[in-house]
Length: 182
Image 1: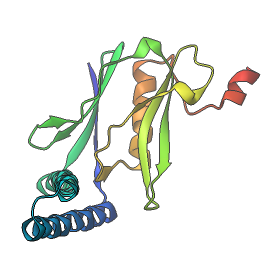
Image 2 (image 1 turned 135 degrees about the horizontal axis):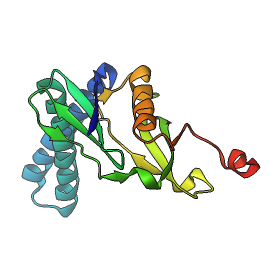
Image 3 (image 1 turned 180 degrees about the horizontal axis):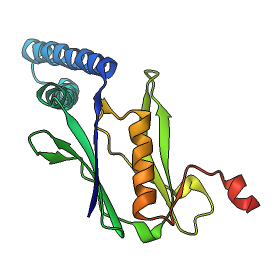
C-alpha cells in the first residue's frame, strides 16, 4: 500500500471570518432568546433561534478543530487499484474520509479551483470517468477542512502520486472542445 502524507497549512484569514460568524450567531442567539422571554413563545423566534444555534455549533466545531490541532495531514492511500483520501491529526484521529475510488474507472484527475465570496480560493480534486466526453459529469473529492489548505507544490505532489500509482491516468483539466478535437 502506497501512502502520501501532506501537512496542511492553517488559513488565518478564514479563521478570523469564522470567529466573526461565531460571534454573530452568538449575539443572535442571545437577542432571539431575549425576544423569546420578553414576547413569549413564537414559531418565528423559535425557527430563527434554532438556525442560529445550528450555525453556532458548526462554526464552533470548525474553530475547535483549528485551535486544538497543531498539525493536520492529508493522507492519500492507494493499493494500485483503489485510492482513499482522508485527514489525520497528530493524535491519530481520522476524519473527512472519502469513499474508496476505483482507479481503473478513472481517466483524468485534476485540481479544481473555486473563488469564494470572500475572494479566497478553495481547492478540491476531481476526476472524470473513462469515456466521459465532458467535464460536466466529474466527481469532486473535497479533502481539505475549511480552515486548512495545501500549498501548490503539495497539491501537485498529490497529482504526481496518483500518476505514480496508476500511470494510465491523465493529469490536468481538459475542455470538451479539446476532447472533441482528438
